[in-house]
Image (cartoon, rainbow, N blue to C red):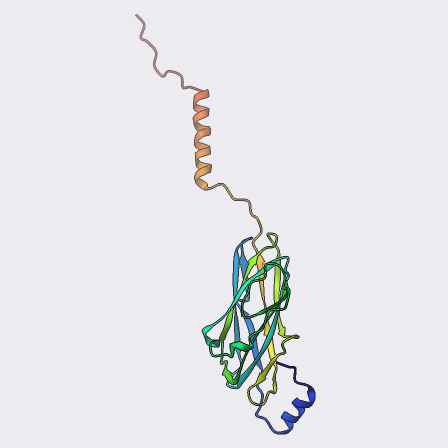
Length: 215
C-alpha cells in the first residue's frame, strides 16, 4: 500500500468524511519472564472502536541480543483479511529467519501488515495474532519490544475514505531469568545432621552402666 501524501488527505478531509476515532494496539501481557533458551509469547491486541478499518502495518523492534524471533501467526479474528496483501519478506533476510505472513527486515525489526479493502471490524480487545520469541540472551538480560506505525508499509487507514487513523502503541518487556544457586532441600539438612550425630556417637561410646558383683 503506497503512502498517502498530505494533499490526498486534505482532499478527503475537505469532502467531509466521518469522524476518525483514535485506536490502540498493545502487547499482552505487559511483561514476561522466560528461562534462557525457552520461548515466550505475546498477543497483539487492538482496539479500533466501531469504525471500519482498511488496515495498515506495525513495526516491532527489540534487542536481538536478548530475543530471537521464532514466528508470528494471525488469529482467527483476521481470517477475512485480503491475504494477498500481507507483508512480503524482504529479499535476503537474516540467516535463520522464520517464514510467514510478515517481513523480517533485520534481526531486531519485524513488520506485520493486514488489509481488507471492504473494511475490517476491529472492536475492543481484538487479538490480531501472536508473536513468539526464543530467549537467546544471557541470564538476567531484558528487552523492551516497541511498536510503531510501519515506516516501510505505512500506518492504518479508515476503509473507503483512506483517512489515517492515529494509533497509540504500548509495548512489552521480556526478561530472561537470572541464574540462581539451588538451595539444599530441608531433607538434605536433616540427613546431614543425623549423620553427624551417628559419627559423634561412634567416637564416644557409652560406658557400662553396671559392674560385676564381687565374688
